[in-house]
Image 1 (cartoon, one colour):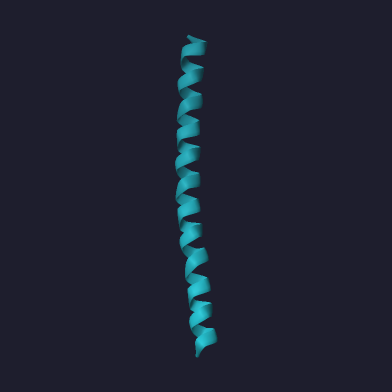
Image 2 (tube, one colour):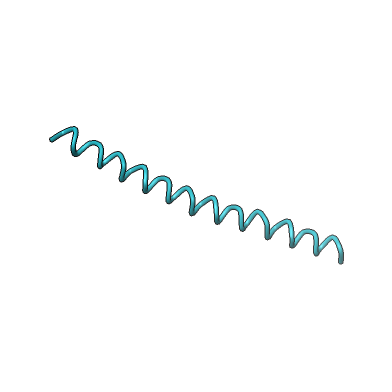
Length: 45
């Protein structure tokens, strides 16, 4: 039983980290794209 509990804990931690990492990645990518567009517009104009 203890091994099962440990496995559940180990599985839960990576999942939480993966979710946070995914959200952070999307946020960074979105901000990056916005900054690039913001810089390109003034430069082109």
